Length: 195
Image (cartoon, rainbow, N blue to C red):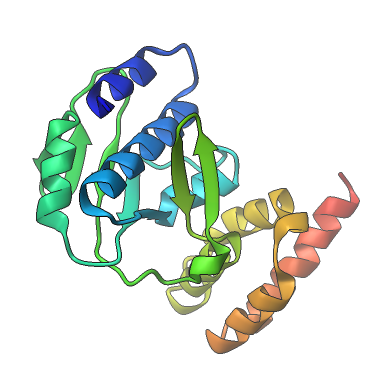
């Protein structure tokens, strides 16, 4: 499989940058799985962007792998047209700004909650909606990042029917963010009521 050629084809497609990033993530996932037998999972801002349908915009993609294999992943990314710049791997392209970071695991979320997105012959894996909401609630509560509210609400409104509320409430209690979750759920339900 010529993954670099696939990335070049995606870069030249007449589609929006959000779609290009998602497709490239799926190609990167296939390349890493094929060469290292690891399944990278998208977390952080790119997961928020995915779950808000592109509403939240981020320039970097965090792909967590189960073990620390940054050197080997770096070798794969170099072959696919990326170059190293500090902690990021930057796609060498004037058609799309894309930076990839590959922190080692473990994944801060449940494997059985992962979102698998099939794109052609590739599959991208995203941290579960419940776990990225918990991640953002932690930032909102414990690091006083109040701007996270907009994106927490965006993810909850957009994915309301798909959320495992029992799991989310249990995790929120464990992480001591359950009061904030309750307030966010109340706001989400008010927004949905007026849609």
